[in-house]
Length: 136
Picture 1 (spheres, one colour):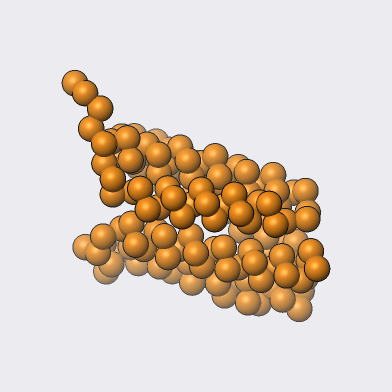
Picture 2 (cartoon, rainbow, N blue to C red):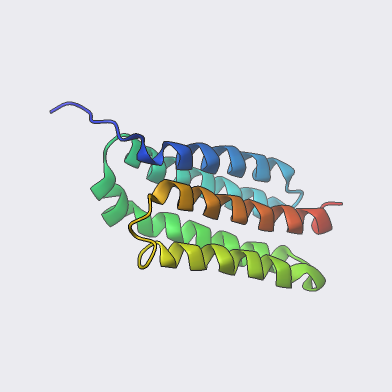
């Protein structure tokens, strides 16, 4: 049985890797760089497994680690964001969570790759907002 490539998550892999690499390079706080590298690793494994045709393993086995890394990253991001700017970061991350949850319900019939990439971009916007106030 040969390898069956699935390009459905290719855009997600690209936005996740490029964006997370950029965000990690912009952070001036060591714990955010470490968390970004953790999220980068899970992004490569999760979306890479999808691209390489291992969707069932990615969704049934590895997705919990990817979601866990994003959760840890979100908590660390909120912890590192100054109180005066935390509301906007919380709003952006809540919006990303809402879109992700809707992708398992009413938005399930839409192609997932644009939604996941939109979620990535919203997360990067939250990081950029925090970085602008923490690392200036």
